[in-house]
Length: 211
Image (cartoon, rainbow, N blue to C red; front, top):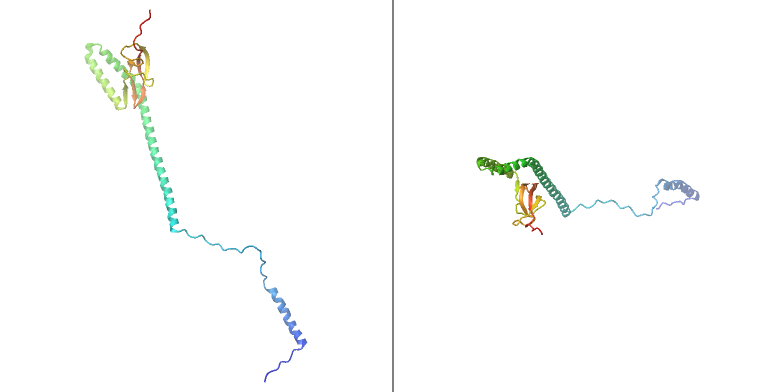
């Protein structure tokens, strides 16, 4: 035996609808509204760059090592250039100081040579000649140990960089513009001219006077 349902009257149906109406109408207002579409592309999430491979790491390390080695070679070259420059400056300073000293000693050497030449004119002054010659030889030996060399231009062609011409004299044996006589000796210091040699040049064979 089944239970029978009595149909609802219009009044009851209207009451039920009225009871459900406010609740169902208030429900949409309680839910948040979805954001309006902006029309742009969807944001892409950020991703980290891939880690370098072993080959890339090795290449970077080799490049860095090559840079360090190049800087090392440059530093070594700069240091060597500095040492050479310092040694050259030191040598030039030493030679300059020696040259200044020799400029004061050369007149003494000239006087010794003149005294020796004068003593040789006197036969009775043999002992004096030997003594002066010994002192002169010792003096020259000391100078040579310090880089001093005597210029010996006799018979050579005149060189304005090494010789100082005092006059000309005719000569049938010595060619024209060659050194005929050395009046005062010249000297060099380590290849640099210290004092030019004072010389007399040949003007060639004497020309016959016209009648």
